[in-house]
Image 1 (cartoon, protein in one colour):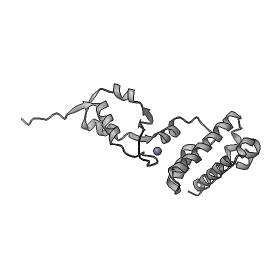
Image 2: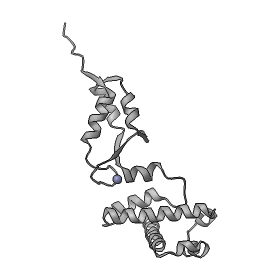
Image 3: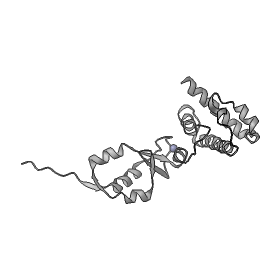
Image 4: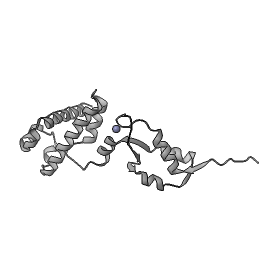
Length: 170
Ligand SMILES: [Zn+2]
């Protein structure tokens, strides 16, 4: 009778830790990872959660789990998971800047941070969402919310316009 060799089992947490250490770049922006977030099925899993995942699994099960894992840098995970519903599609804007422009990371970061700040400002002003429904007029925002007229926000809004135009043509 042929002997079936049972495949070696290890705790899931062990696999996850190894996986974490093997990831070198953010899966969204390509940045070299220093601190990172591990995302499983659309949720960030914390160190503490990983530590509690002590179920023993074999290589085959691990391969399935692994196919649903992604590693994100702090910036991308923050944009993806800590953004309140908002006026701008900041996540898509960020990906646009990374994928369709030649800007470097720190410039992209700056644009995203500005747009996010402006977004928070609009939320604080209870800015009517209808203004955004069809064809958003950035001049209108600047007229309505004087603080948005600051050069930093104007530039970010202009970039966002470029993103919207690109999205339309796509
Ligand atoms: Zn990233």
